[in-house]
Image (cartoon, helix red, strand yellow):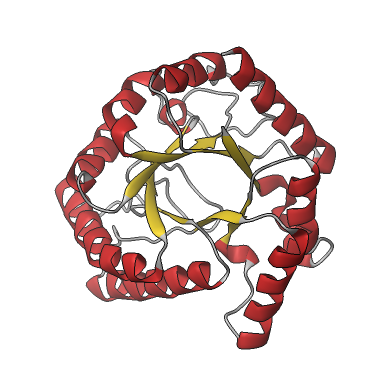
Length: 274
């Protein structure tokens, strides 16, 4: 099984400059991971010197970049803002491609109070399908997530409710857009049917965000293996389906580098026993 890691716990350290992207990549290599992941907010700009330095750092460490996560807001009620969000996504595709990522995680958008369910689904699908040929051109695959909420947003994700996530995913079947399935976010949505939802999209899943929550109905980040996500059952299900994609740890236990190491150990051991 191929494993990478997105350590949300270390975002502040990387953003402040206390830890470089090169040092983070090296940490992932030392933990014997197959790749590392980045949030788009960790990439400072797209100037030639900066991009060349990131490319050199990744090459020097000798571990590939699997996924970059971004969060377009295609459910915004203002059509001009939706156009901005599309243009931002095109930039994100180009930037993720420039630093060598395999996947770019995308979102539907926020649950804006004035956006109806039908409009939100229609706007999301239309923009995703418009973006797909661009990502294809750049050689990077878009993966849509059953998302909850990043710190940059005011509202929860429009597609956090499973029925909305599935409605959008259904319209992406047969396109180049895959699924990044988050193991915690169905529980965050208040529904205890993670495997049932996963089973409906398993043929589209390219990557798994191995994420944890401590409370049903709430985004409650805790160290992997200490919350309520049924990892043994999920991993057993993935094995039964002969899943050959990526396990991308979304580590958010806020225990520093030691916490990242413990999360990696937990996932490897749990996968082996499942």
